[in-house]
Image 1 (cartoon, rainbow, N blue to C red):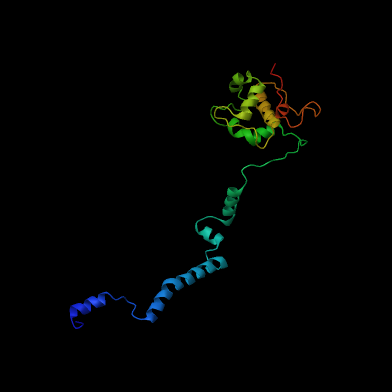
Image 2 (image 1 turned 30 degrees about the horizontal axis):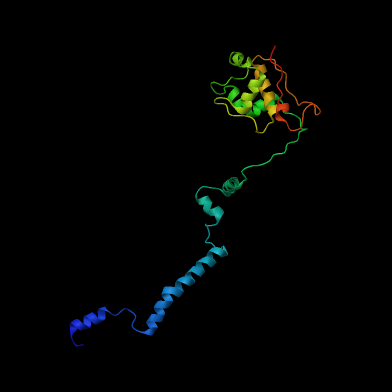
Length: 203
């Protein structure tokens, strides 16, 4: 029966490539043990910090047009805390209205400025606004109105924003007095409303 060619072909079809124990050991080695060694080698390569030249973080980023300083700044920006506390010296001299105007307001209210914003010295544009009084103008400056963003809570104290409001309003025809810090005994500590006390309306 083993001489039958059909039987011999069927017998060969049912046997695998492993025909002896040595081949079985090699198959087990290459199937299980070799991948483990490869994984250990890759982990050791990554941990060791050995890299081909040109793949250092700085050099690699430079290939994409990003400098190391830019990357470091971006990482620091992403990692910065959401909130922060700023302690300001309450006894520091107040910025003048003109200084605050030049630092924060000139882009919109200076020349040429933006359309719709009353520009410095434009009496016609400031006329209707001045009738609202200093307190309303200060509130609009601190909290924003329309397209104008809120200016409060930035680099300047509310009283300094008030000084910029007076600077602009007086250049537009008002005669608001320049606000100053109230006396220490008259105002409770830490009250923003006392710091931004409204001067009298124009006469």
